[in-house]
Image 1 (cartoon, rainbow, N blue to C red):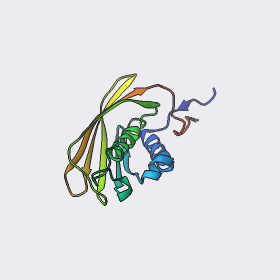
Image 2 (image 1 turned 135 degrees about the vertical axis):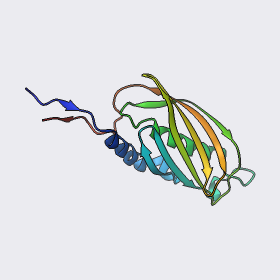
Image 3 (image 1 turned 180 degrees about the vertical axis):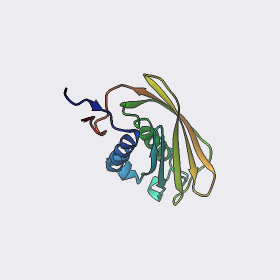
Image 4 (image 1 turned 45 degrees about the horizontal axis):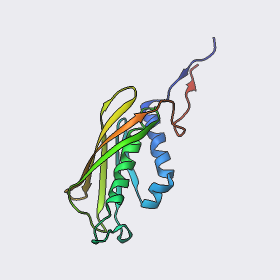
Length: 154
């Protein structure tokens, strides 16, 4: 009887997603760093810089959005099923300034075979909420290309 395959463990999936995120060109350009990944959860951080400022000398909403999207993307791909953003709604609660360390945490709150919903909160290190978001992912199916392949049991 030939050996059967088994899927990578949740820890293996999380490790692979985190490693892929560390290589992602956009996140690297933005200075976004992943600090924790577990099934359905991700924490990323970003130290804002003056070149991220908007017309008012505050951190541009697009930089905050990028941090939210990165946390959502990672959390949404920890279970071995390729998932892509369908919708992301952000409420900006307080401003951020150059030099702030922002932390975004994405948590899965619901999942079906085809969609998953996440809550994402961005806080300033030392306290204070900067933004909150609700995100919806389409679970396309299939294995994301950065996850380990099933291995033969035997």
